[in-house]
View (cartoon, rainbow, N blue to C red):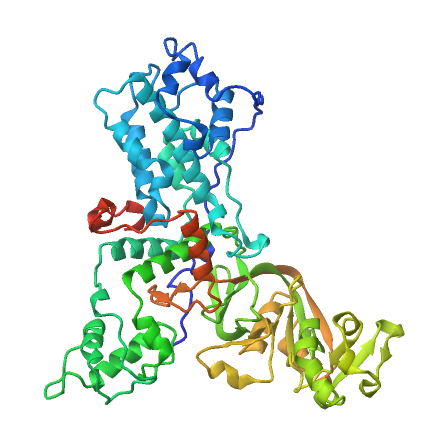
Length: 586
């Protein structure tokens, strides 16, 4: 079975459903406040609501710019609104309890999105909201902390957070977060601020499945942490072998012990369960417990929750405006999907970059197909791969039908590799030499290359090493993406071109000349990094972190205290029952 990002209706990550409704500012301008105005002076001087409040009273709240997340945004917001209170009615001693409770509940549930509720003042807000006889200073503190908390929450939910660091992807695939000031401004014009904030959540089955799984894991359902780590004391543990760890493995797999079978023996029932487990997790389903299968089995509940949080962070930070027609490649799963009309037309295994020559995360446009491509060797490969071979044998490139050129077009001059001193070759000198491989079956790009301009020189292309697609780990290229079915991808790209046919493609291939075929309507290609995806049944698949990007992202988020795992014994949020799971994720 080929694992995929689709369920019965949609391409996953919610790819056809990533979109959310943006909170936008009303179409009028504000008068900028003076930078030296004391913070919240406008709020204190509001003659309609706060006639009796003095500057000393707000000082007693102990709120300072250091204790707030967005002091300048709050200052500007209240100055723009002449100090009008947002979370109380026309008299300061009459709180809008329903509005406050719904907003606080939203902030408290932020952990279900992989966020940290304490970043939104939830503990202090709970005390202030439930205070039976709040003082004036309590009400002022409540007002400011609520504004500060929801402004930060809305910004965090709407796009890439600063805490994500540089690890999500390139700028052209990122969704920039809305500013706290724009969030506050829009919320001040609605009767249902909590409802408006919910519209910032990513939509789609994938994000919902991640959130639901995080809630379930928090209650320790099916938790086998006490059995871990399994060791088996050998590199490869095969059916028929015996180990004390088999007892724990059988519990994790949920299989029974066949009559007359030794408890420590790796029996056929257990083998079938392990094969199903391997297939589900995109591993080679051979029943042999090797390093990759063992590593997957030894993930604790905490490991799984953090992997979910990293993937939710990426979904929130990615551009959600997807085309109706596109190609998507997910690097960790090493799979490609071609989508048209919101439905998957083709899916296939691909080869992606080695960990030290990573395929980049980006978005660009497909503009056509090149048949019988030549291959111009990139500078880094010339220096790292080709130069050592040329130093041993100056004719090494000719054996691969790679020719050396200086200049371009009519002024191009073919170079004799034996006339060049390769031992003293520098990066600058090598950059003046073009190494070009002629078209043909021997060509590294095969017979097909998808035209998709990008600064990384990464392409979708054919390959003359078809045997690589049978491997479990296909992180094998120098960064480009090799296609297991390049002709299918070429047909998909050219299918929208008028008066084009497979026969024309075949004729050009047989002629052997490099030919570019442009399409009338370019469409997007997305290269993404999600270490969890959904299979065709809608089940979550925990995949490998092939480039260790989860580790980097989680490390950056932890430094910013940007997420918090609920602790079952210490945090009541972990005890949410099925009935209490937020409606949006049930």
